[in-house]
Length: 317
View (cartoon, rainbow, N blue to C red):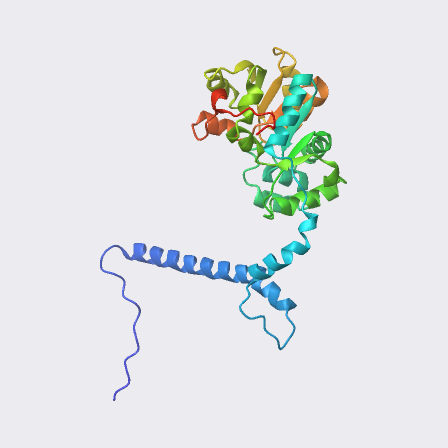
């Protein structure tokens, strides 16, 4: 039998241009490489770590790394650290408003944590690679002044929302950052960093706004004032724009020129942490870092429950 002729190059499909075919082929190769890289990363981060704990010449049949984690978790469950629930945060804010006491409720997300970490816990280059969005959040790295001012605000804040996610950009930075600045998390009143959304969906934000004089701060403040005003909220003033962390002293000064207020809602990126702490510490007010909830309310992606829809039992639920 004669030897088969060597296969020639794979023909380019007749339909469409050769450039289209090669582009599609390149996309396919990239997708396959990504999938392979993902599978290897998943293995190295889980089963491979477990495998290094198993003695030579033995097997651990029919158990995956998730099974081992689930079996071993009770051994560390006693180290779980409780966070303030949305009901608890509401009770603290409502009590402060009723009694005329200052209170700052701030949140640490990846923007704040990268700002705190750059040039200290991680390199500025790494922070820039992870935080391409930081200019939108009002920070241009490197900025050691903003880093230290933000660390001082964290020390002074009354309630701090922190991420429950263990992703490298979230808890992967949170505890190294706190250690670097000598801040003991056990001395802080912590809640979840999504408490702004949970206060709203639980009806607690509506209850906080009811009967209070509200000040709005941030680039969306005017639109938010219109939204809340249509829903019967007494918005006594709004302040915009907030041009990043460098604008914090100016914003604080301008607030003093506005009508008196009970509660400030601040949606100003990383600067919101500093603004809330200043309004509380210097003016004796209650201030809440509202974050992107402001945008979602304005754009109709989130609804503000009406007071009649909110359960107002004594237990705060």
